[in-house]
Image 1 (cartoon, rainbow, N blue to C red):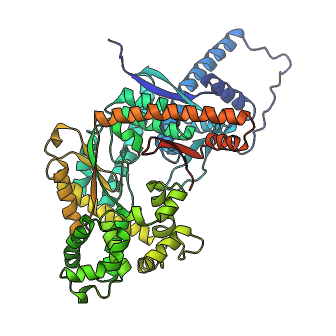
Image 2 (image 1 turned 180 degrees about the vertical axis):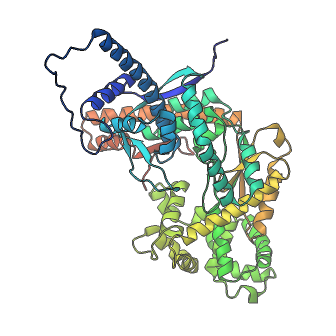
Image 3 (image 1 turned 90 degrees about the horizontal axis):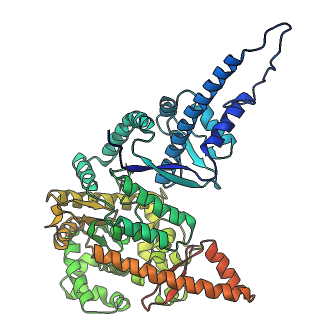
Length: 555
């Protein structure tokens, strides 16, 4: 039979050999025992008078048995450690959840002793928490434990693989049933999974080269990218979970932004300032604004936007402009001007550009991603019902006092209600968008507030105009008018990213060398900055003028 040429990664521990672990297991079992709350008393062997000594042949047979058992233990440990590492790497919280029944079926009755040995060696820890039908024990490695892998034939440890997969099947089936039940849409569930089958890492060598050469702020960031690439190499994608707000999670939602150009994505369509826009539906309910009125107001918003009126000037004349354009004063007199202005900004996709004064953005070197984090943290998703001690919430409350009142009222009885309500609305919208696109036989997926169109034959007629029409039609049924942008991918996008990465690496290298030179001369600022960079407190990026910029990761 021809030997398989395929290889697979077998994960292991960089600083601990399997032989050492097995040796420690055997030694521990003979002395103080394993998996016992208190060390068992070991009774010394007593040689009775005139009793014959053991025959040499019997000792040899015992040695053979011990060697055979140690070899079996080595195989078991190799697969156990590989399984735990793989689950730790594939889980964003760094935990491996393993059912005791599965462990016993795969590794036999000694599985507890095997785990206990890893605990006693300081390699592995357990969260110690188990709940019937809700949660299994979680396992995680000590902070100093490093991973490595070797490439083996695809048949390597296949007997254990087969056992594990057979044991996991009932749990996977139940998990899928639970996901379907949470989503409450079998058609959407099956079509989404079908589209995921077409997702792949298109430029494998380039992705590996990028991750190898890119300068990450921390080793943890680097490991995460490597982990995602490994998952793409494994293939067989499906929905991993559905949360209580019906949000769909898959490998696509776990893929970092910088890895997307290496996938077979044709383009993606994003809704600008998506969650602030979703809040408009809550404002409409609060102020009894009908969808029909928003349909009349929106074209006027567009006219204002295309006339290039400065945003801060729009606020002063907005009510007058609406009335001049045949919006009856009676219909909008109860709607505060800051609410109308907020709805204008979010509908035109301008909210993140004006919500924090430009002077402050420039002074603090805030990126758009920072502004989003700050607004979500201090305004929309904050659990506090006051702006006290929150610099950016105070700015928002001053500019949009009535909007901020609605934000607080929406959280008064339940501090997480607003966040959950907005995510539920988003899930409902994108569920309907996906169903509309699946009805046209397209292979698309969602990443929360974006639609991703895959570069496959089935999507030849799936133009951005078609997707925009479907997205806009669904949003408008809710009285929402989204501003949608298109990001294009493909080989050109990937090559551009690779070139930017090379330039960034050269600039960072030169900059760090300059800092080191200054540090050697005793420059305290350079010494402090090098330490912060080493601790992962900063990331680097190139601004629009081609200059290297340092950006704090903790705002």
